[in-house]
Length: 495
Ligand SMILES: Cc1cc2nc3c(=O)[nH]c(=O)nc-3n(C[C@H](O)[C@H](O)[C@H](O)COP(=O)(O)OP(=O)(O)OC[C@H]3O[C@@H](n4cnc5c(N)ncnc54)[C@H](O)[C@@H]3O)c2cc1C
Image 1: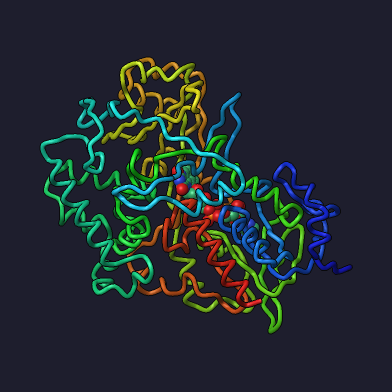
Image 2 (image 1 turned 180 degrees about the horizontal axis):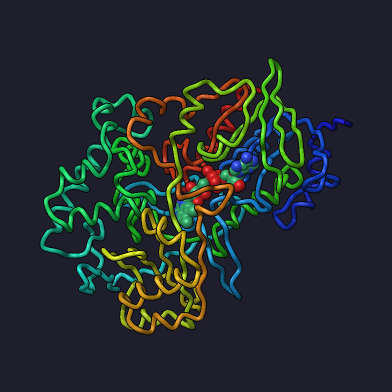
């Protein structure tokens, strides 16, 4: 079979093929056909934000012979924007923080990348004088935004707020670089967040708020996650308030036209380097090269970057096999459980009542909501998430049942008008073969302590990227971009 070296000329010469963000080299084998053989300096597995950032930064450093292999027929991975009339619906990741606040830093590498490729942001709808909705024990109240982690007022607010302050302090002590080396790592990794929550709250309200915190940032139940992993995750976002706040945290802004625009534009510039519908099944390392076999191409390269969630690396056959601890890490780092739901209305009617669209509720499946309308306010959109057990339960239901459950929740929070949605858009991320759950991998007890140190170091010529490997913004688009920049620097130094 003819071998062809991917030079700057051949690759950039076919860049126009990527005009729709679906860059495939001319003559690439059709899915199911014989894969073509290619040579490159670097092969990247996965065209999510992490893999695409890796490739972009390498090309910018002068390493232009790069191939990106993507299993899906689109780029963007856990970001996916569906056009909706003159607007759009982000069925995956969407929010971005553009400014530093008292809760912590901005997502500055993500915003820098978006700026480079010309994708603009706009602030989430959240008027300063608006009211949020709280729904607790069957009672609905409204309240103005509080600079106390945005918690609804309650006689036992102090219980939840005290626990959050403690978590922030412990996260600060653990840090995000080497949590397994923290002084109390063994104690923290020997328990779930559920165990800690039971011991450190005194009220039902406090416990419910902490449940919501774990569900909202990790899409899992508090019993699913190690306390040490949760502290690492908070540390990578600086404070829990930074992760959960809308006006002053990670939900501050959105991308005009949707978040997948960033990946699409990066892929377009990479052109024919990106090969879609090409799932990687085998990675073989020899002394002087690494060969990555996928549906449409077999790429021999000097270095490889695997930019997929660790749980999905279990579906790739490594030759020689990965070191035992790295292989076992992948077996012990499952994905969270989430279904993202949108109800669409002629107009955002809740704004007439002075509501921001934000809700905190103790009754699912939609326990948090936001106004997700486009900047024009037309159409009106409410977004929510079924997380943890709610997602697991409703994943077995029909879309019609999930729609009914969603609109029932919205009607409890915003009144009967919420039942008259003109449309409903959802995505069950557990059913996505190339994600198998979201938002992120979640470590149960014992994993960070015993296996955490294997997360980032390369194995021979194979390097790791992906938001799960980030030390800042881990689990978020920011972490994906940062991990790609780190991997690109690591690989460039080796070449
Ligand atoms: C519902 C939802 C809401 C979210 N909300 C936010 C938010 O508001 N803000 C935020 O910052 N983040 C959010 N996130 C998280 C954010 O989307 C992710 O952290 C980020 O997109 C991860 O990027 P990545 O490149 O690390 O991984 P991925 O996006 O998962 O990319 C990995 C890529 O590898 C591909 N792949 C997998 N296996 C193979 C294989 N064997 N061969 C070839 N390709 C393969 C996949 O198809 C995928 O394209 C959300 C995620 C979801 C799902």
